[in-house]
Image (cartoon, rainbow, N blue to C red; front, side, top):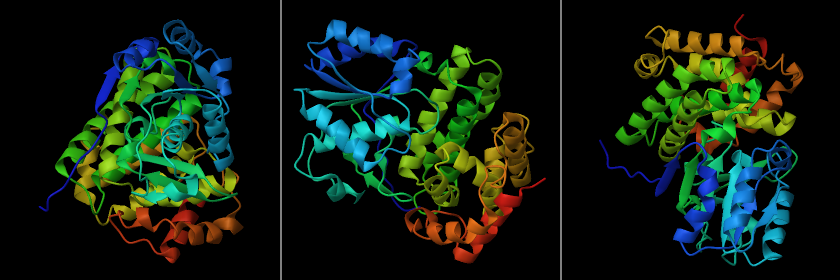
Length: 382
């Protein structure tokens, strides 16, 4: 095979309660004035309060920004940057979902360098460095703590990405205690999102490689073995930690072997209707799996082999996910998610702007094919 490269975060700390060690992690690096990024709901629920209080006891000064919103806009990024500039912080910490981590990544770059946000959109456009960066996810899904990518909403229905190795943090922290209070619906959406990362990395057309394959298989095994456990027993710390590990492995896999048509078709759904990213992926997954099965049945069978209870075939993989989606209580079709059938041609047209993802798909997806997939996802498999 051709040569390949693989990159990921330097240090990962896996331990329940690890966020309480943030001040020590900072001190080891000579840092004392962190800028803490999160969202107001996590503070209200008390999820991140212990981490903030521990930091305040161990650091010289802590500035907290809790204005993160789902699908963060440029306005949120600039508000976060302004809050950073109002202090004299020497590092950036994010404890939250993918939105918090993505904004923290971008702010760590903008606060350090001289570029403006639009200048860093795209692949490899960051020209400077960044501030020391520490990321701790509160969901097992995005894998943002180990990916060199941040996604920002640029308009009513449009998003742009920043992709650069500079965005990989100094430390990724997997603390299962942060995920214990997740509602079942969020656990299901984010867990399926992580499994889509693993599947699409394993079948990535261009950059699939042995390291990403190993991580994708291990990710899918961990996630599929534990997702029903966390849905049934939200306080199962071991299962929660396994989900975080699986999400991280999937993130490392797709950061190096990029995702394909599920994500490409999910982005317009999320952009137009503000549907959570994990749910958008879940809605498109069965249709795209069925379409791709013709091109990579062996790979899908290999994935099915690591899933407990799945028939070891492409059809078995697809059926397992249909059952999981049905059992989770999530909307199973675009129709159930209240997406008008008349809008499907617009979604298909918009999906064509995701060529950076579509080129990774095992089968070519043109606009007519995208429309058929949306139609199937709208009507469903029942």
